[in-house]
Length: 313
Image (cartoon, rainbow, N blue to C red; front, top):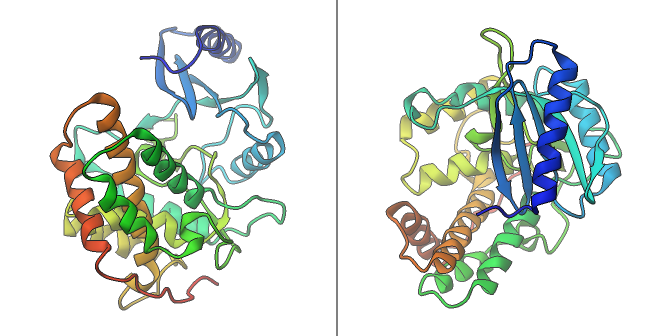
């Protein structure tokens, strides 16, 4: 089901086509809707991608994030234009199409590349006017949707785990430090190969980019590992590559979990909240993966979070 109004989808597709044809007179054409969610509509025409950002997106904040991506093309995929356009009350941006991670080949997932990019991002000086990273706010939105979804047997487990988190991880208080440049929503879907032959991996999606606690960017793979969804060797490769690249989110050696525990718990609760809300909406039981994150929430509720140590420089 399309969540976007028909005129927005139609006109965004037309904008993508016009931009693609302006870039190349030999456009092979071919259009596709890559994402159609309340938090973003993304369409592709040949080698051009157009994105309608969430309603209510702050124009100045998005412009700052686009500027950052433009200035760091070795870390973030740069936009085709440095400023957003307006379309049906939404802000729209245009991007080159990059090759995404193949979801059918998990063994080839670029964990080392993702970790190295994060380390480089975290070591990049943040502009003074950049907003706060939106990771905790997105987690809080997922929990709010769970509360609105209606009754489900698993909801109590998720809410108990959520309640154990410190206020900053629930977006109820400022983050303990905000000097580090963070992606805010790291997962493998946020990596693409640059649209050149054998181009490098780059990070995409600047909507949550900002300053904050860098461990949040490592939290999703950490949570998957803790839930048994990411093999230990993949987690070890990711963590080793991040450390080797000088990432500041965890100590260079020793136990990383005092820094990772709270963000990983928050991402586990966010993932479980989304899963339960979707199951309620579809009137179906949780699948095996969804149940595993709910089970992790059960365990989290009985063990207090570790106190994070200060590692970011």
